[in-house]
Image (tube, rainbow, N blue to C red; front, top):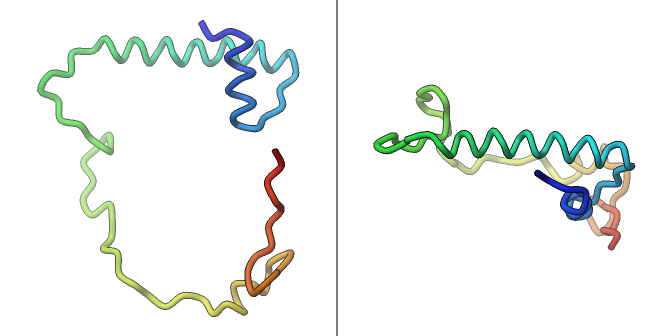
Length: 94
């Protein structure tokens, strides 16, 4: 069972503010998720190859080949704020 302290810790790491009702709800929901994960952990997967997709996917990734990118002026044209020829983003708050 995930308790209130653990939910608040994860919320702080994710920089989320949760009210008391949300903390209580998240405690229950996260506990259910971990219960499902425990059930999956009980499966006998001996001889089952790891996969990245549920179904067979061919050519899921294209070759990584360099291509021309947008000119800087075009990329910055719709930016809400620009500084030093780049996007201006707010500084992270502690």
